[in-house]
Length: 113
Image (cartoon, rainbow, N blue to C red):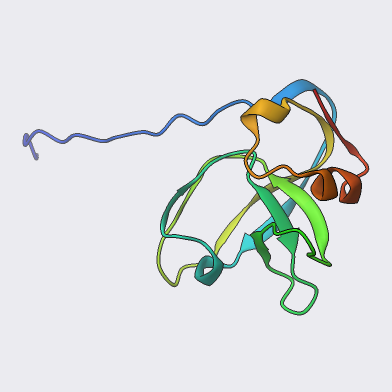
């Protein structure tokens, strides 16, 4: 029996959905080489790279599908992460990261409040 004291830290994600109805998610693989190691917040704007099929941070001019990261996730160096991405739904724009006019135009099924 191990009686040594252990401390576990948990990160709480933020809720980006304004309404859970009609929310549609899909699984995406985050390309770890394209993210700064550490915490990536829920609501991060992403694009699916058409060549690799992996998600990367959105930049204006991206040609892949536009989605939002569904949950807060930790990205480590060299370790791709499979996570959920929001394809459709109603979200709070103020809680999302990196939303631009071009991103909004690209993702027709996500409504921003």
